[in-house]
Image (tube, rainbow, N blue to C red):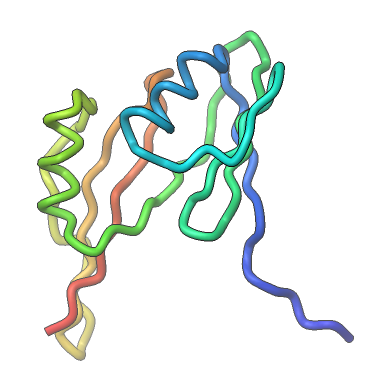
Amino acid sequence: MHALGPLSQIARRVENLNRARAFWRDLLGLPEHYAFPGLAFYDLGGTRLMLRETGKREEADILYLSVPDIGAAHAHLIEKGADFTGAPHLIHRHPDGCEECMAFLKDDEGRDLALHARITP
């Protein structure tokens, strides 16, 4: 049996590709691999994000984006105009003292995304 590797790509349907490209590339700062009519591909820390234009707004699962410094990432994205629903906050403290923090924001279609950081003591 072959072992599965890490997640290589995730797809997200978007209503308007031009607006989504501005959000993911310009606001969030993700490197764009390439784009062509109806599709755009981004580097999400080694996992490829594929945006596919559908022409209608659809529900989507929450994508949790890992950041090394959640306070700095939150402040930077607020300055760029990101729509956060709250400040970074503690989600869980592990027995070893490691803390997991999150801050939730909306994408260009009003769907949830989250910044996620693991803070080690």
